[in-house]
Image 1 (cartoon, one colour):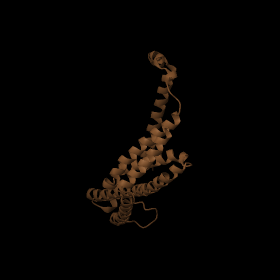
Image 2 (cartoon, rainbow, N blue to C red):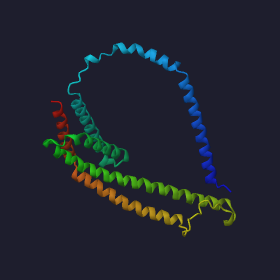
Image 3 (tube, helix red, strand yellow):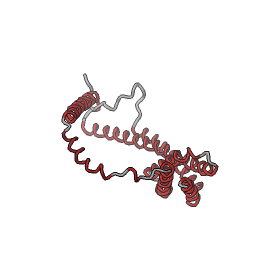
Image 4 (spheres, one colour):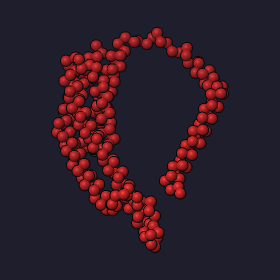
Length: 235
């Protein structure tokens, strides 16, 4: 006898297979009829004569591109860091982490120069703190997902008890414990709350460390030094 989960999986696999077949037929039809592509190419052809590649200045283009990237990412990091300590939002933390990682990537090839090594070390220290917060956020999301699952199980148990007059008639879809002793929803919730409180203390400590070691003037000085490196690339 096929269970509900297996039936749902079979139904989903069948829909995926049918959509894949439909997409394959549409792709074959588009490839066989190239008239639309020829019409687009003809319309775009009028723009080719307006491009003058000879007028583009390519001297020092790589250094200038790297400099522009460093300045832009430094600005993004500055904006994101203003929101991390105050709001402690995951979006601001994610933006700050990505910006710090990007700056490390851009500065790594330049670390051979003496004036780049020191700000690069400070940037890596900031990146390590942001990574700690990001790892805590990942664990936090897992705890929240677990809490939602426990809440769903508890809700199912309450509704099943309200529907069926006898415990023997109730659904057993959540009763599989893989051979282990069953754990009540209340116990699971209590365990998740303990984990959440411990994670709260860890995040609070990390945020305090971030605010203490990286006050606004320290961050501004780091970004100023990084922008100065970018300015020297233009010379």
